[in-house]
Length: 128
Length: 128
Length: 128
Length: 128
Image (cartoon, rainbow over all chains, first blue to last red):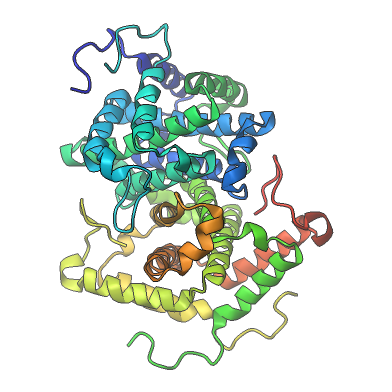
Protein backbone atom coordinates (compact mmCIF):
# COMPACT_ATOMS: atom_id res chain seq x y z
CA UNK A 1 0.00 0.00 0.00
CA UNK A 2 2.74 2.44 0.81
CA UNK A 3 5.38 1.11 -1.49
CA UNK A 4 3.61 -0.87 -4.14
CA UNK A 5 6.49 -2.56 -5.85
CA UNK A 6 7.37 0.36 -8.09
CA UNK A 7 10.41 1.41 -6.09
CA UNK A 8 13.36 2.42 -8.19
CA UNK A 9 15.89 -0.24 -9.16
CA UNK A 10 18.41 1.37 -6.86
CA UNK A 11 17.18 3.23 -3.83
CA UNK A 12 17.96 6.92 -4.20
CA UNK A 13 19.26 7.09 -0.63
CA UNK A 14 21.82 4.48 -1.51
CA UNK A 15 24.10 6.91 -3.29
CA UNK A 16 24.21 9.22 -0.28
CA UNK A 17 24.80 6.37 2.13
CA UNK A 18 27.60 5.01 -0.07
CA UNK A 19 29.34 8.38 0.09
CA UNK A 20 28.97 8.62 3.85
CA UNK A 21 30.18 5.07 4.30
CA UNK A 22 33.25 5.72 2.15
CA UNK A 23 33.98 8.92 4.03
CA UNK A 24 33.89 7.09 7.37
CA UNK A 25 35.77 4.06 6.06
CA UNK A 26 38.67 6.14 4.75
CA UNK A 27 39.07 7.61 8.24
CA UNK A 28 38.58 4.25 9.98
CA UNK A 29 35.67 5.65 11.93
CA UNK A 30 33.44 2.58 11.74
CA UNK A 31 34.67 1.56 15.18
CA UNK A 32 33.09 4.70 16.62
CA UNK A 33 29.86 4.27 14.69
CA UNK A 34 27.93 1.70 16.67
CA UNK A 35 24.19 2.38 17.08
CA UNK A 36 24.59 3.80 20.58
CA UNK A 37 27.23 6.34 19.61
CA UNK A 38 25.37 7.33 16.46
CA UNK A 39 22.17 7.93 18.42
CA UNK A 40 24.21 10.29 20.62
CA UNK A 41 25.53 12.03 17.51
CA UNK A 42 21.95 12.55 16.31
CA UNK A 43 20.96 14.04 19.69
CA UNK A 44 24.03 16.24 19.83
CA UNK A 45 23.44 17.64 16.33
CA UNK A 46 19.75 18.11 17.10
CA UNK A 47 20.85 20.15 20.12
CA UNK A 48 22.91 22.40 17.87
CA UNK A 49 19.93 22.87 15.57
CA UNK A 50 17.68 23.85 18.47
CA UNK A 51 20.37 26.22 19.75
CA UNK A 52 20.09 28.33 16.60
CA UNK A 53 16.38 28.98 17.12
CA UNK A 54 16.05 29.00 20.90
CA UNK A 55 15.81 32.76 21.35
CA UNK A 56 13.82 33.45 18.15
CA UNK A 57 10.09 33.94 18.60
CA UNK A 58 7.68 31.83 16.61
CA UNK A 59 6.40 34.77 14.60
CA UNK A 60 9.95 35.68 13.57
CA UNK A 61 11.17 32.17 12.83
CA UNK A 62 10.35 32.06 9.11
CA UNK A 63 11.98 35.42 8.40
CA UNK A 64 14.95 34.43 10.53
CA UNK A 65 15.40 31.26 8.51
CA UNK A 66 15.33 33.19 5.22
CA UNK A 67 18.23 35.43 6.21
CA UNK A 68 21.20 34.08 4.20
CA UNK A 69 23.58 33.69 7.12
CA UNK A 70 20.99 31.97 9.31
CA UNK A 71 19.90 29.84 6.37
CA UNK A 72 23.47 28.60 5.92
CA UNK A 73 23.75 27.74 9.63
CA UNK A 74 20.44 25.88 9.60
CA UNK A 75 21.43 24.04 6.45
CA UNK A 76 24.72 22.91 7.99
CA UNK A 77 23.10 21.71 11.22
CA UNK A 78 20.26 19.96 9.40
CA UNK A 79 22.89 18.20 7.29
CA UNK A 80 24.73 17.10 10.43
CA UNK A 81 21.56 15.56 11.88
CA UNK A 82 20.84 13.83 8.57
CA UNK A 83 24.38 12.49 8.19
CA UNK A 84 24.29 10.95 11.66
CA UNK A 85 20.85 9.54 10.98
CA UNK A 86 21.89 7.99 7.64
CA UNK A 87 25.00 6.45 9.20
CA UNK A 88 22.74 4.97 11.87
CA UNK A 89 20.40 3.58 9.20
CA UNK A 90 23.37 2.06 7.42
CA UNK A 91 24.71 0.48 10.58
CA UNK A 92 21.35 -0.98 11.57
CA UNK A 93 20.20 -2.00 8.07
CA UNK A 94 17.21 0.32 8.24
CA UNK A 95 15.80 1.53 4.92
CA UNK A 96 15.06 5.16 5.77
CA UNK A 97 12.63 5.71 2.93
CA UNK A 98 10.61 2.66 3.91
CA UNK A 99 10.80 3.61 7.58
CA UNK A 100 9.30 7.02 6.80
CA UNK A 101 6.54 5.53 4.63
CA UNK A 102 5.67 2.97 7.30
CA UNK A 103 5.57 5.65 10.00
CA UNK A 104 3.30 7.79 7.84
CA UNK A 105 0.89 4.88 7.66
CA UNK A 106 0.89 4.61 11.45
CA UNK A 107 0.36 8.35 11.73
CA UNK A 108 -2.55 8.20 9.28
CA UNK A 109 -4.28 5.74 11.57
CA UNK A 110 -3.40 7.59 14.79
CA UNK A 111 -4.33 11.04 13.49
CA UNK A 112 -7.51 10.76 11.45
CA UNK A 113 -8.03 13.85 9.35
CA UNK A 114 -11.35 14.82 10.89
CA UNK A 115 -10.40 14.64 14.55
CA UNK A 116 -6.87 15.99 14.09
CA UNK A 117 -7.64 19.04 11.99
CA UNK A 118 -5.99 22.16 13.35
CA UNK A 119 -5.06 20.51 16.64
CA UNK A 120 -1.63 19.88 18.01
CA UNK A 121 -1.11 17.08 20.46
CA UNK A 122 -2.96 16.99 23.73
CA UNK A 123 -1.72 15.96 27.15
CA UNK A 124 -1.11 12.27 27.35
CA UNK A 125 -1.04 11.87 23.61
CA UNK A 126 2.10 12.12 21.56
CA UNK A 127 1.60 13.44 18.06
CA UNK A 128 4.45 11.67 16.41
CA UNK B 1 1.86 6.78 -5.78
CA UNK B 2 4.90 7.24 -3.60
CA UNK B 3 7.76 6.98 -6.01
CA UNK B 4 6.74 6.76 -9.61
CA UNK B 5 9.86 5.26 -11.07
CA UNK B 6 11.69 8.45 -11.93
CA UNK B 7 14.41 7.95 -9.32
CA UNK B 8 18.04 9.07 -8.97
CA UNK B 9 18.02 11.88 -11.54
CA UNK B 10 15.28 13.36 -9.34
CA UNK B 11 15.92 14.10 -5.72
CA UNK B 12 15.41 11.12 -3.41
CA UNK B 13 13.73 13.26 -0.79
CA UNK B 14 11.25 15.01 -3.09
CA UNK B 15 8.58 12.34 -3.18
CA UNK B 16 8.77 11.88 0.56
CA UNK B 17 8.46 15.59 1.21
CA UNK B 18 5.39 15.78 -1.02
CA UNK B 19 3.74 13.03 1.01
CA UNK B 20 4.62 14.68 4.31
CA UNK B 21 3.38 18.03 3.09
CA UNK B 22 0.06 16.55 2.02
CA UNK B 23 -0.27 14.73 5.33
CA UNK B 24 0.25 17.96 7.28
CA UNK B 25 -1.93 20.05 4.96
CA UNK B 26 -4.91 17.71 5.29
CA UNK B 27 -4.72 18.17 9.07
CA UNK B 28 -4.10 21.94 8.85
CA UNK B 29 -0.88 21.54 10.78
CA UNK B 30 1.19 24.04 8.77
CA UNK B 31 0.46 26.66 11.43
CA UNK B 32 2.37 24.56 13.96
CA UNK B 33 5.25 23.85 11.60
CA UNK B 34 7.37 26.97 11.74
CA UNK B 35 11.15 26.43 11.85
CA UNK B 36 11.36 26.93 15.60
CA UNK B 37 8.69 24.36 16.44
CA UNK B 38 10.08 21.87 13.93
CA UNK B 39 13.56 22.17 15.41
CA UNK B 40 12.00 21.28 18.76
CA UNK B 41 10.28 18.30 17.16
CA UNK B 42 13.63 17.09 15.82
CA UNK B 43 15.21 17.42 19.29
CA UNK B 44 12.29 15.71 20.97
CA UNK B 45 12.38 12.75 18.57
CA UNK B 46 16.17 12.56 18.87
CA UNK B 47 15.64 12.30 22.62
CA UNK B 48 13.35 9.31 22.13
CA UNK B 49 15.95 7.67 19.91
CA UNK B 50 18.66 8.14 22.52
CA UNK B 51 16.31 6.81 25.21
CA UNK B 52 16.19 3.41 23.51
CA UNK B 53 19.94 2.96 23.69
CA UNK B 54 20.87 4.79 26.89
CA UNK B 55 21.34 1.72 29.09
CA UNK B 56 22.83 -0.53 26.38
CA UNK B 57 26.61 -0.88 26.42
CA UNK B 58 28.59 -0.12 23.29
CA UNK B 59 29.66 -3.71 22.81
CA UNK B 60 26.04 -4.87 22.93
CA UNK B 61 24.57 -2.13 20.76
CA UNK B 62 24.79 -3.89 17.39
CA UNK B 63 23.23 -7.09 18.69
CA UNK B 64 20.58 -5.07 20.50
CA UNK B 65 19.67 -3.29 17.26
CA UNK B 66 19.32 -6.59 15.39
CA UNK B 67 16.71 -7.93 17.81
CA UNK B 68 13.43 -7.63 15.88
CA UNK B 69 11.52 -5.77 18.57
CA UNK B 70 14.34 -3.29 19.19
CA UNK B 71 14.85 -2.93 15.45
CA UNK B 72 11.22 -1.93 15.02
CA UNK B 73 11.47 0.65 17.81
CA UNK B 74 14.65 2.13 16.36
CA UNK B 75 13.10 2.22 12.90
CA UNK B 76 10.05 4.09 14.18
CA UNK B 77 12.10 6.67 16.11
CA UNK B 78 14.54 7.18 13.25
CA UNK B 79 11.54 7.79 11.01
CA UNK B 80 10.16 10.36 13.45
CA UNK B 81 13.44 12.29 13.46
CA UNK B 82 13.57 12.15 9.65
CA UNK B 83 9.96 13.27 9.24
CA UNK B 84 10.52 16.32 11.45
CA UNK B 85 13.76 17.07 9.63
CA UNK B 86 12.16 16.82 6.17
CA UNK B 87 9.26 19.06 7.23
CA UNK B 88 11.85 21.57 8.43
CA UNK B 89 13.70 21.35 5.10
CA UNK B 90 10.43 21.91 3.29
CA UNK B 91 9.52 24.93 5.42
CA UNK B 92 12.95 26.53 5.02
CA UNK B 93 13.51 25.62 1.35
CA UNK B 94 16.57 23.58 2.16
CA UNK B 95 17.51 20.84 -0.30
CA UNK B 96 18.53 18.08 2.08
CA UNK B 97 20.49 16.06 -0.45
CA UNK B 98 22.53 19.10 -1.44
CA UNK B 99 22.94 20.12 2.22
CA UNK B 100 24.43 16.70 2.97
CA UNK B 101 26.76 16.80 -0.03
CA UNK B 102 27.92 20.32 0.86
CA UNK B 103 28.55 19.32 4.47
CA UNK B 104 30.53 16.30 3.33
CA UNK B 105 32.77 18.65 1.36
CA UNK B 106 33.33 20.75 4.48
CA UNK B 107 34.06 17.63 6.48
CA UNK B 108 36.55 16.43 3.87
CA UNK B 109 38.48 19.64 4.33
CA UNK B 110 38.21 19.64 8.14
CA UNK B 111 39.06 15.99 8.58
CA UNK B 112 41.88 15.11 6.21
CA UNK B 113 42.21 11.35 5.84
CA UNK B 114 45.76 11.14 7.13
CA UNK B 115 45.37 13.14 10.31
CA UNK B 116 41.88 11.87 11.12
CA UNK B 117 42.45 8.18 10.71
CA UNK B 118 41.16 6.20 13.65
CA UNK B 119 40.68 9.30 15.80
CA UNK B 120 37.47 10.65 17.19
CA UNK B 121 37.17 14.32 17.97
CA UNK B 122 39.49 15.99 20.41
CA UNK B 123 38.73 18.59 23.05
CA UNK B 124 37.95 21.93 21.51
CA UNK B 125 37.28 20.44 18.14
CA UNK B 126 33.88 19.28 17.01
CA UNK B 127 33.92 16.41 14.55
CA UNK B 128 30.77 17.21 12.72
CA UNK C 1 10.05 9.95 54.77
CA UNK C 2 11.44 12.02 51.96
CA UNK C 3 10.60 15.46 53.16
CA UNK C 4 10.04 15.10 56.84
CA UNK C 5 9.58 18.69 57.74
CA UNK C 6 13.24 19.33 58.36
CA UNK C 7 13.73 21.42 55.27
CA UNK C 8 15.91 24.45 55.78
CA UNK C 9 14.20 27.70 56.72
CA UNK C 10 15.12 29.18 53.36
CA UNK C 11 15.29 26.83 50.43
CA UNK C 12 18.94 26.34 49.52
CA UNK C 13 18.16 26.53 45.80
CA UNK C 14 16.81 30.01 46.39
CA UNK C 15 20.23 31.62 46.62
CA UNK C 16 21.29 30.13 43.30
CA UNK C 17 18.07 31.13 41.60
CA UNK C 18 18.38 34.67 42.95
CA UNK C 19 21.84 34.96 41.41
CA UNK C 20 20.65 33.62 38.06
CA UNK C 21 17.65 35.91 38.11
CA UNK C 22 19.81 38.94 38.82
CA UNK C 23 22.24 37.97 36.07
CA UNK C 24 19.40 37.75 33.53
CA UNK C 25 17.65 40.87 34.80
CA UNK C 26 20.77 43.03 34.47
CA UNK C 27 20.98 41.98 30.83
CA UNK C 28 17.23 42.38 30.22
CA UNK C 29 17.01 38.77 29.11
CA UNK C 30 13.71 37.95 30.83
CA UNK C 31 11.95 38.60 27.53
CA UNK C 32 13.83 35.65 26.02
CA UNK C 33 13.23 33.39 28.98
CA UNK C 34 9.71 32.12 28.49
CA UNK C 35 9.15 28.42 29.25
CA UNK C 36 9.33 27.39 25.59
CA UNK C 37 12.66 29.07 24.94
CA UNK C 38 14.13 27.80 28.19
CA UNK C 39 13.11 24.24 27.38
CA UNK C 40 15.04 24.66 24.11
CA UNK C 41 18.02 25.97 26.05
CA UNK C 42 17.93 22.86 28.25
CA UNK C 43 17.84 20.60 25.17
CA UNK C 44 20.59 22.50 23.45
CA UNK C 45 22.90 22.32 26.48
CA UNK C 46 22.04 18.63 26.94
CA UNK C 47 23.14 18.14 23.32
CA UNK C 48 26.50 19.71 24.11
CA UNK C 49 26.89 17.43 27.11
CA UNK C 50 26.16 14.35 25.02
CA UNK C 51 28.58 15.57 22.35
CA UNK C 52 31.49 15.31 24.78
CA UNK C 53 30.86 11.62 25.43
CA UNK C 54 29.49 10.40 22.11
CA UNK C 55 32.65 8.68 20.88
CA UNK C 56 33.83 7.43 24.29
CA UNK C 57 33.07 3.80 25.05
CA UNK C 58 31.23 2.87 28.21
CA UNK C 59 34.21 1.13 29.75
CA UNK C 60 36.35 4.23 29.22
CA UNK C 61 33.78 6.79 30.34
CA UNK C 62 34.74 7.00 34.03
CA UNK C 63 38.45 7.41 33.27
CA UNK C 64 37.64 9.92 30.55
CA UNK C 65 35.62 11.98 33.03
CA UNK C 66 38.47 12.00 35.55
CA UNK C 67 40.93 13.56 33.10
CA UNK C 68 41.21 17.19 34.24
CA UNK C 69 40.51 18.74 30.84
CA UNK C 70 37.50 16.54 30.20
CA UNK C 71 36.31 17.07 33.76
CA UNK C 72 36.33 20.82 33.22
CA UNK C 73 34.35 20.49 29.99
CA UNK C 74 31.79 18.21 31.60
CA UNK C 75 31.50 20.55 34.58
CA UNK C 76 30.85 23.55 32.32
CA UNK C 77 28.21 21.76 30.24
CA UNK C 78 26.49 20.29 33.29
CA UNK C 79 26.37 23.81 34.71
CA UNK C 80 24.79 25.10 31.50
CA UNK C 81 22.04 22.48 31.65
CA UNK C 82 21.44 23.26 35.32
CA UNK C 83 21.34 27.03 34.78
CA UNK C 84 18.72 26.68 32.04
CA UNK C 85 16.75 24.27 34.19
CA UNK C 86 16.81 26.58 37.22
CA UNK C 87 15.75 29.56 35.12
CA UNK C 88 12.86 27.43 33.84
CA UNK C 89 11.91 26.48 37.40
CA UNK C 90 11.98 30.14 38.37
CA UNK C 91 9.82 31.17 35.43
CA UNK C 92 7.26 28.44 36.04
CA UNK C 93 7.26 28.63 39.86
CA UNK C 94 8.45 25.05 40.18
CA UNK C 95 10.30 24.15 43.37
CA UNK C 96 13.06 21.95 41.98
CA UNK C 97 13.88 20.26 45.26
CA UNK C 98 10.25 19.32 45.82
CA UNK C 99 9.88 18.25 42.18
CA UNK C 100 12.80 15.85 42.58
CA UNK C 101 11.47 14.44 45.87
CA UNK C 102 8.00 13.95 44.37
CA UNK C 103 9.43 12.21 41.31
CA UNK C 104 11.50 9.93 43.52
CA UNK C 105 8.27 8.87 45.24
CA UNK C 106 6.73 8.07 41.86
CA UNK C 107 9.83 6.14 40.88
CA UNK C 108 9.76 4.17 44.13
CA UNK C 109 6.27 2.98 43.26
CA UNK C 110 7.09 2.29 39.60
CA UNK C 111 10.36 0.50 40.26
CA UNK C 112 9.96 -1.76 43.27
CA UNK C 113 13.31 -2.86 44.60
CA UNK C 114 12.74 -6.58 44.12
CA UNK C 115 11.58 -6.55 40.51
CA UNK C 116 13.91 -3.76 39.38
CA UNK C 117 17.15 -5.06 40.80
CA UNK C 118 19.93 -5.03 38.23
CA UNK C 119 17.55 -4.40 35.34
CA UNK C 120 17.46 -1.43 33.05
CA UNK C 121 14.22 -0.46 31.40
CA UNK C 122 12.44 -2.84 29.12
CA UNK C 123 10.64 -2.13 25.83
CA UNK C 124 7.45 -0.25 26.41
CA UNK C 125 8.47 0.80 29.85
CA UNK C 126 10.31 4.00 30.57
CA UNK C 127 12.59 3.91 33.59
CA UNK C 128 12.46 7.52 34.49
CA UNK D 1 34.25 35.82 45.02
CA UNK D 2 30.67 35.02 44.10
CA UNK D 3 30.12 32.94 47.13
CA UNK D 4 31.91 34.83 49.81
CA UNK D 5 31.34 32.75 52.86
CA UNK D 6 27.61 33.20 53.06
CA UNK D 7 26.93 29.74 51.71
CA UNK D 8 24.13 27.75 53.29
CA UNK D 9 25.11 25.45 56.14
CA UNK D 10 24.68 22.40 53.94
CA UNK D 11 24.97 22.16 50.17
CA UNK D 12 21.47 22.18 48.71
CA UNK D 13 22.22 19.32 46.37
CA UNK D 14 23.92 17.04 48.92
CA UNK D 15 20.81 15.67 50.59
CA UNK D 16 19.16 15.09 47.22
CA UNK D 17 22.18 13.28 45.86
CA UNK D 18 22.27 11.03 48.90
CA UNK D 19 18.66 10.05 48.30
CA UNK D 20 19.26 9.43 44.59
CA UNK D 21 22.34 7.38 45.32
CA UNK D 22 20.46 5.22 47.80
CA UNK D 23 17.60 4.76 45.34
CA UNK D 24 19.98 3.58 42.61
CA UNK D 25 22.05 1.43 44.97
CA UNK D 26 19.03 -0.48 46.25
CA UNK D 27 18.19 -1.39 42.67
CA UNK D 28 21.82 -2.17 41.72
CA UNK D 29 21.68 0.39 38.95
CA UNK D 30 25.18 1.82 39.45
CA UNK D 31 26.41 -0.45 36.66
CA UNK D 32 24.16 1.44 34.22
CA UNK D 33 25.13 4.84 35.55
CA UNK D 34 28.46 5.56 33.92
CA UNK D 35 28.97 9.13 32.66
CA UNK D 36 28.17 8.22 29.04
CA UNK D 37 24.85 6.58 29.84
CA UNK D 38 23.85 9.34 32.23
CA UNK D 39 24.58 12.00 29.62
CA UNK D 40 22.18 10.10 27.34
CA UNK D 41 19.60 10.05 30.12
CA UNK D 42 19.90 13.82 30.46
CA UNK D 43 19.41 14.27 26.70
CA UNK D 44 16.50 11.89 26.60
CA UNK D 45 14.70 13.63 29.47
CA UNK D 46 15.47 17.03 27.92
CA UNK D 47 13.79 15.74 24.77
CA UNK D 48 10.67 14.90 26.75
CA UNK D 49 10.66 18.37 28.25
CA UNK D 50 10.92 20.00 24.83
CA UNK D 51 8.16 17.73 23.54
CA UNK D 52 5.66 19.27 25.95
CA UNK D 53 6.22 22.77 24.58
CA UNK D 54 7.01 22.15 20.92
CA UNK D 55 3.63 23.16 19.51
CA UNK D 56 2.96 25.97 21.99
CA UNK D 57 3.67 29.49 20.76
CA UNK D 58 5.97 31.75 22.72
CA UNK D 59 3.19 34.14 23.65
CA UNK D 60 1.12 31.29 25.07
CA UNK D 61 3.94 29.51 26.88
CA UNK D 62 3.58 31.18 30.28
CA UNK D 63 -0.17 30.62 30.43
CA UNK D 64 0.29 27.06 29.21
CA UNK D 65 2.77 26.40 32.02
CA UNK D 66 0.35 27.74 34.65
CA UNK D 67 -2.40 25.31 33.69
CA UNK D 68 -2.34 22.73 36.51
CA UNK D 69 -2.15 19.67 34.27
CA UNK D 70 0.64 21.13 32.14
CA UNK D 71 2.40 22.37 35.26
CA UNK D 72 2.45 18.84 36.65
CA UNK D 73 3.86 17.45 33.41
CA UNK D 74 6.56 20.11 33.27
CA UNK D 75 7.42 19.53 36.91
CA UNK D 76 7.82 15.79 36.35
CA UNK D 77 10.03 16.22 33.27
CA UNK D 78 12.14 18.92 34.89
CA UNK D 79 12.64 16.54 37.82
CA UNK D 80 13.73 13.78 35.44
CA UNK D 81 16.36 16.01 33.84
CA UNK D 82 17.58 17.10 37.26
CA UNK D 83 17.74 13.55 38.62
CA UNK D 84 19.88 12.39 35.69
CA UNK D 85 22.06 15.46 36.04
CA UNK D 86 22.58 14.95 39.78
CA UNK D 87 23.44 11.28 39.28
CA UNK D 88 25.98 12.39 36.68
CA UNK D 89 27.45 14.93 39.11
CA UNK D 90 27.69 12.23 41.76
CA UNK D 91 29.40 9.80 39.40
CA UNK D 92 31.92 12.38 38.19
CA UNK D 93 32.53 14.11 41.54
CA UNK D 94 31.24 17.41 40.24
CA UNK D 95 29.88 19.86 42.83
CA UNK D 96 26.85 21.20 40.98
CA UNK D 97 26.45 24.32 43.08
CA UNK D 98 30.08 25.28 42.55
CA UNK D 99 29.85 24.39 38.85
CA UNK D 100 26.92 26.79 38.48
CA UNK D 101 28.70 29.58 40.37
CA UNK D 102 31.87 29.12 38.30
CA UNK D 103 29.89 29.17 35.05
CA UNK D 104 28.13 32.33 36.14
CA UNK D 105 31.54 33.96 36.57
CA UNK D 106 32.50 32.92 33.03
CA UNK D 107 29.20 34.23 31.73
CA UNK D 108 29.70 37.54 33.53
CA UNK D 109 32.96 37.99 31.62
CA UNK D 110 31.56 36.80 28.29
CA UNK D 111 28.37 38.82 28.47
CA UNK D 112 29.17 42.24 29.86
CA UNK D 113 26.04 44.01 30.99
CA UNK D 114 26.37 46.96 28.64
CA UNK D 115 26.95 45.10 25.40
CA UNK D 116 24.59 42.23 26.17
CA UNK D 117 21.57 44.22 27.26
CA UNK D 118 18.42 43.07 25.53
CA UNK D 119 20.31 40.97 23.00
CA UNK D 120 20.16 37.24 22.55
CA UNK D 121 23.10 35.46 21.02
CA UNK D 122 24.33 36.38 17.61
CA UNK D 123 25.54 34.11 14.80
CA UNK D 124 28.88 32.59 15.61
CA UNK D 125 28.56 33.29 19.29
CA UNK D 126 26.98 30.95 21.75
CA UNK D 127 25.31 32.62 24.69
CA UNK D 128 25.84 29.92 27.20
